[in-house]
Image (tube, rainbow, N blue to C red; front, side, top):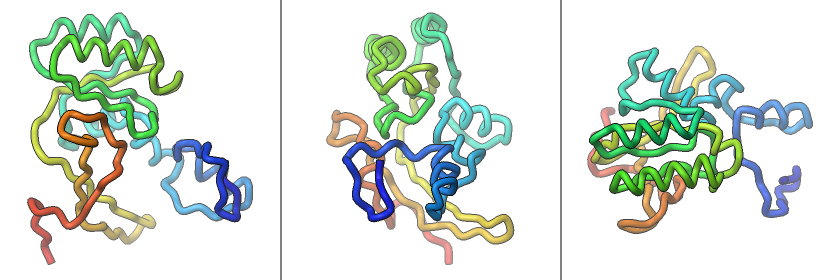
Length: 181
């Protein structure tokens, strides 16, 4: 864990919904989302339910707590999917398989072999694969005023067919998003 001098032992935990509370209880000032807001990043299943409930455009997907149900679902569908470990997985918990066999192997890695840890392997979200560019827009709000940063593009793959980078390599401005001023 880190210390107030900025030194770490190289074993930093994921920033999650408990981070602000832990920092504040230790007297460390912290700029972070509230516990409730952090669940959007910390739980893919929660985020999917939230977006669906509030009609926020998102890929169609289903959350699963049980391996056997997720496996049967993947076997029953006829389209390409993305497999997401529901909890934080150090930026590596999203797998984009090219085939049904790869999707089943990804499910095994996450839920059976716990490749990303016990918490990340407790449940998954299986989404329809969407082709195209992805952007992120980060917006800060104090409850009255909001300010958005420019859209950024997150190159997910380390190389063309490489593993997920976990958000390393985000850049802005993007060449396909127009900025309105």
